[in-house]
Amino acid sequence: MSPEEVLSSTNIAYVVICAAMVMLMTPGLAFFYGGMVRVKSALNMLMMSFISLGIVSILWVLYGFSLTFSDTSSSPIIGNLDYLGLQDITVDQGEQIAFIVFQLMFAILTPALMSGALADRVKFGSWALFVVLWVTVVYFPVAHWVWSPTGWLFEQEVIDFAGGTAVHINAGAGGLAAALVIGKRIGFKKDPMRPHNLPMVLLGAGLLWFGWFGFNAGSALSPSGTAALMALNTQVATGAAIVGWLVYERIRHGAFTTLGAASGAIAGLVAITPSGAHVNPMGAILIGIVAGVACAWAVGLKYKLGYDDSLDVVGVHLVGGLVGTLLVGFLATGGLGGFEQFGKQALGAFSVLAYSFVVTYLIAQLIQRTIGFRATEDEETAGLDLAYHAETGYDFSQSGTAPVSVDSVPVSANAKKVDA
Amino acid sequence: MKLITAVIKPHRLDEVKAALQAFGVHGLTVTEASGYGRQRGHTEVYRGAEYTVDLVPKVRVEILVEDSDADQLVEVVVKAARTGKIGDGKVWSVPVDTAVRVRTGERGPDAL
Image (cartoon, rainbow over all chains, first blue to last red):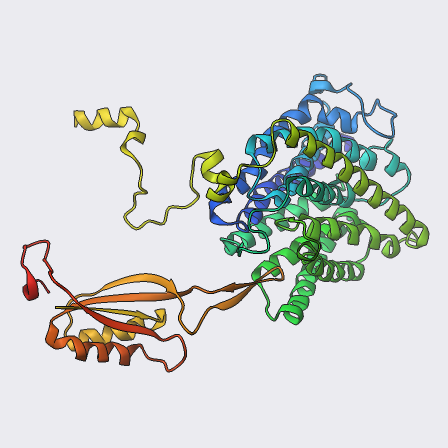
């Protein structure tokens, strides 16, 4: 093997493994969100994330990659259709293919993040359509702005190493817009809406944390020093954010909660995502602590302002994304940090925020006014699991049999019984 | 016959069971229950949202006994279940018309 080939195969191995780790984040997110909702809609919450793995994988091959990363496009706004269907990709382009599968996982995760803002109350089919429209009109262009060499934010030298703007601010602003269109859950601020399974939330946070090493360090696209620094800072900022959130909570509400620890971890991961390759580990600690405290404060806003961002996509992803994206403006190493860079960061953060909010609001309105986005009152009250999935999440009945009608026994099973 | 029902703190169940066994009670039924009395509930915090949980976990113990044992058994249960703090629960007894042992068909006190 020539030196170039060795380098190439090393990069391919690295990026493909990181892609697999990022893939794990979507089921991790499903657990993280799924444990936080009430038992009657737990499966629906899991499925809102999981369906993205299905839909976006197809769209990415059809036109998503092309619209986002086509290297024959010189547009600062969006790619072109030269890579439609990825038909001309050959096995000789290993690094390119590895990049395609790696970036696909980001496109899957980002719409799934928004599902937390819409917990327990949207029609599943309409959500699926929303994912299709949203990635097409919001995610693909915004990712092009930020990461494509011709994208306008890329050319402005906005620092977003692994997705603070394109993924987290984008999903946070979109989640808020969609939640405003859909409205509050029945009983919001009146009925207790306790998480039904906190161990599952912590499990999900752990899976997200693990996958996030692929997300952040993998964005270096080669096993380099940058990748190693990103991995270190990812760990450090996340740990610091847990501490920040828990200390705030203990002072403010009198307890160190499990949900707070899990949420703090995600807040730290979000904040270090744009910034981790451009700060030193002390900077990462600072970003983590600020993110932990800021997000712990921000999750209370929905009660004061009266919007039902059910699982705090705004409080964690939007606020955490802003903290990381803005702070790196000052904390960036190598002579970059300062007011000039801060201005660029603010431009990047708020242009993505505004675009995502406005366009997502329009998409959600479009769906609500045509096929309907919100579930009916009966479906919501009884739980979406039965309404859309014909299943229940748990059967703890001691007799070992849920009350199932005999009509539901498959005909073949009945026939066997007769034979015996 | 009488039916003694006790709604008690879950962590006192083992003491109550042991006391009933020592008295010579042959069988009992235990159900997980929830409710509140003067204790009311407790507060839980989820991401800063404080919820008052007014139904607290309890255990309901049911024992069928002969009339002559009833008063004494109520005392046994009360003594075993008591912690002296608010929320210890209630014990009561009611008359029972019929009891049948399913396996043999025995009726009345013979079924106990």
